[in-house]
Length: 155
Picture 1 (cartoon, rainbow, N blue to C red):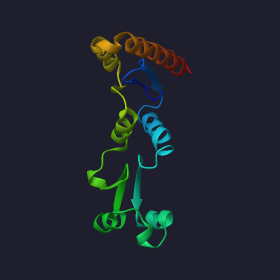
Picture 2 (cartoon, one colour; picture 1 turned 30 degrees about the vertical axis):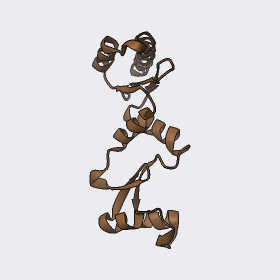
Picture 3 (cartoon, helix red, strand yellow; picture 1 turned 30 degrees about the horizontal axis):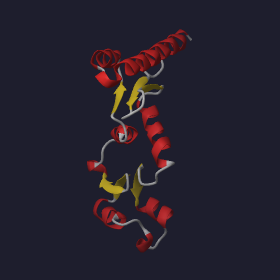
Picture 4 (cartoon, rainbow, N blue to C red; picture 1 turned 135 degrees about the vertical axis):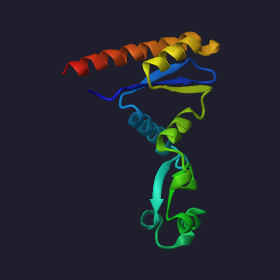
């Protein structure tokens, strides 16, 4: 059995809605967020940092480190860099929650449809101003995913 794919819906402020398939579920959403944000915007990343990582990345001179990193590591030992803010591991959002936030940060609406029920609910409640394009995009990707899953399950 393969992973269940998710359908990602992106509704921009002034363009037609689109949807795409996150074939490996949460892992695909996280990978997309890193690809879309970290590779383009260094201040929109998510990664764990400990003292060894800080020294390897920024050198031995704490004065050369990003502001707040040395204090955060001294207080917590290990932190998550969440979009340039050093957050204790216990207080940080999950990488999946971060990924959804950064993927959808500049959209009117973004949704991750994880189940068939989520798809049905979205189709029933799609935002009026994007209803037809959003529904068509979701239905198209749902059908693509269903065909792919049927082939994979038959192997």
